[in-house]
Length: 68
Image (cartoon, rainbow, N blue to C red; front, side, top):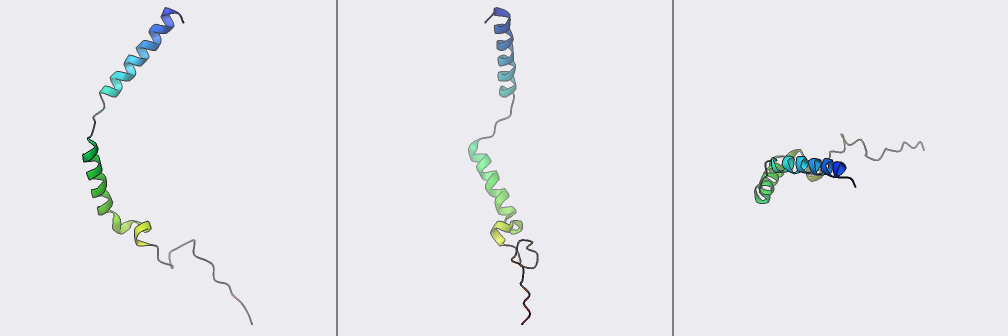
């Protein structure tokens, strides 16, 4: 590896590290509390928790029409 290509690689690395250092960090405990609060606030609209009514469910089994 030549010294000029090594210099380019090192400059890119320094640029990436500066970018990562400038990112605002949030503590894990704060992120978990925010996530829990979001989940509790939106639980009423979550179809995985409340279920989907059979009249609005597009995946409900189709009714079979049989003539006897």
